[in-house]
Image (tube, rainbow, N blue to C red; front, side, top):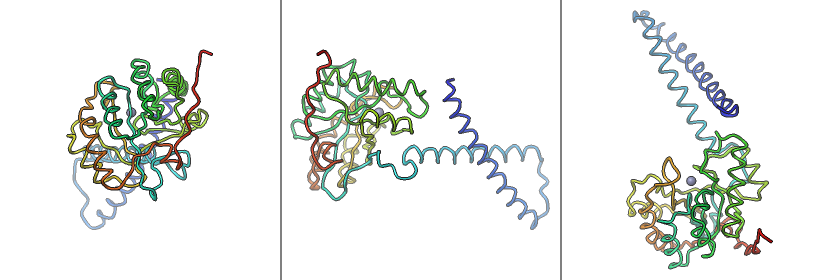
Amino acid sequence: MPWETALRVALALLFVGAWHLVFGWLWNRVAAVRRGRRAPSRWPGRLLTLLKHGFLFLCAVGVTVLLANFYVYHGFGHQPDIYRRGDPARPWVALTFDDGPSPQYTPRILEILEKHGVPATFFMVGAHVEAYPDIAAAVVEAGHEVGNHTYSHINVPTASTQRLYEEMLGTTAVILEVTGQYPRYVRPPRGLYDGRFRRMAALLGQEVVLWNRSSFDWQGSLSPQAIVRRIVNEARPGDILLFHDSGALIGREGGNREATVQALEGIILGVRAKGLEFVPLSQLLHGVEGEADPPFNLVE
Ligand SMILES: [Zn+2]
């Protein structure tokens, strides 16, 4: 186990231990008050103590997980470098697709987007860009924006610093080489980021973009109709909408994105019928569409 991971595990255990103590203290206070009213219990002491500490331990783990979950998804304090949505005062929403490119689904998504003249942003996994360079290039040729989604869809908070930097730099390099477009955004897999990730993103000049409305298409059990209904009902001005054109719940590939592809047209029509306009992320976040990048040529 790398020492950084060990440190994180130790920290988590420390939190669990602290909560266990807090709950144990509360338990004893309550028990003391109750003993005052009733005769002392005649339970077999050891079993009861074991059950009590098992229960307290589960409570402590639960609270630690909940707090950690809140921290990684919402963070603490002001985070001006992290985008979760655009300006709610303007009737704009942005479509984002994660984990691709995929030979099965991305071309079909591109076709639907082109038919309706809808721009989107694709947060690509470096290994997929390397495996399917033609599809990655087609995304950029169709005029869509591209973001960095790490090389192998790592879990950022538990990755070693060296691995994290390799993942972020490697994906930036491969996207630039294959598509000619520098990824101007970065999105941590599963939305889990930390301070190292934020600093590296700033160094790379990539804006950290999360989302505020998920289609939950990664669950794999939703019908296209359910995805359309959810997004069309809930879409609000300023939304960054999350979809997936590849990936699986655990692994990087093998996910079935048929429902996403089939839902897309209904979503475009339904969201437009609410008076909302699909715009590129650059416009949603900064009010103006980004300038076209100068053509890069790494060989010259
Ligand atoms: Zn992802």
